[in-house]
Length: 63
Image (cartoon, rainbow, N blue to C red; front, side):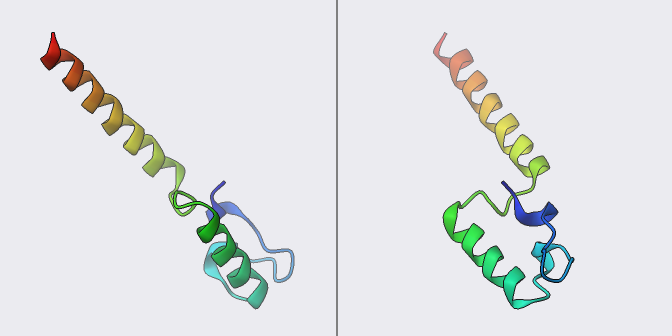
């Protein structure tokens, strides 16, 4: 789960902005849990597309 869309229950602002201590603590916790947590969905799709293209190129070269 990415934290760029989460809203803090304490201050009602996006967690990614880190306006209060609760936001900052949750943002740090989520960043430590997963290295991909900071990536937005479009970046994950682009990464997946590059991976698929690399596998397709490798499969084409071995044939």
